[in-house]
Image (cartoon, rainbow over all chains, first blue to last red; front, top):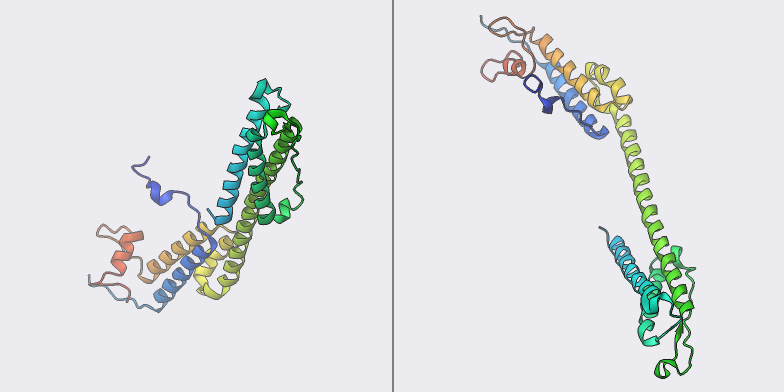
Length: 44
Length: 205
């Protein structure tokens, strides 16, 4: 099973409320940057 | 370990050692049947207890202010080469006093443990309260908010973060028009980020 499942990636861990809030704040900031970004057409 | 805890530990150890000595005199001297003891042998036990009990009364008055003081009396007779004797009763009372101190000390330790647990619980509650209050002010992006709010309110913090990050990935995919690899397979995760934010040829700038 370990061959297809990374135990570190899927291990159950706890996040404290303030830590979660910090991570969500980071996600908010990144989401705002994505909104503000512009699409660049790729050359084929 | 805090200084007060160390002191408590050390006095507890002294009392345990003292108890062992008193118990030995009571139960092994003359096969545990002795009624009269040479003051030279046992006076030291009372002095040691006196020093411990004075310390406890001054350091922890709320627990030990009512600690009974039992004066030991020398018979004043000519036994033991004129030194008199100390009756067994006094040693038995001493043993009871030591046990009393030890039981209070043990209760103090339990009280401290439950105080600590209560303090931790309060801290957790405060942290949750603060985090909940800050959530609305900090998590302002509608999609991130929508993805994480209910999980966050239900104290499912790990899932709240996971859903927010998935939502962020979906936003990037949409904005970058679902980039794919050479075989046409839609990218996701690390490979998606490498492709979209490639330093030489980024899709989003």
